[in-house]
Length: 152
Image (cartoon, rainbow, N blue to C red):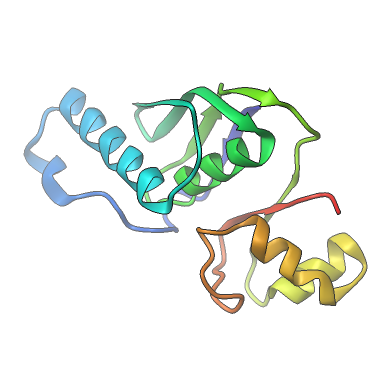
């Protein structure tokens, strides 16, 4: 799928504070493990998933059933505080066109984003559903968050 950039200073804060006194190699393994647990906690689907870190960059390898699962994992991992880029190298069993992506700016709402991409503000629920389980409420998006905009 490729390389995706995120805003490193915003997102879900999942990393433990153990890294200050831990060597870099162990810190990367610790963070990779925490990202894997986060993916599992969200219930995201995958057949095989390996997460590795190179600095603040995350590399995803493995296999998923469809494009939507691949994109959800990428966004879940990328929308974590401290992650700069995600390089998605996962194999997709049923490839479909890649969704568009939108970085939320101040003043955005799902309705406003829906109007921009679909020409209809009332189709905001398509964006909400496409970003579950990372989104739990249509009113809880934040600047810097990257959202999946599926084709209708």
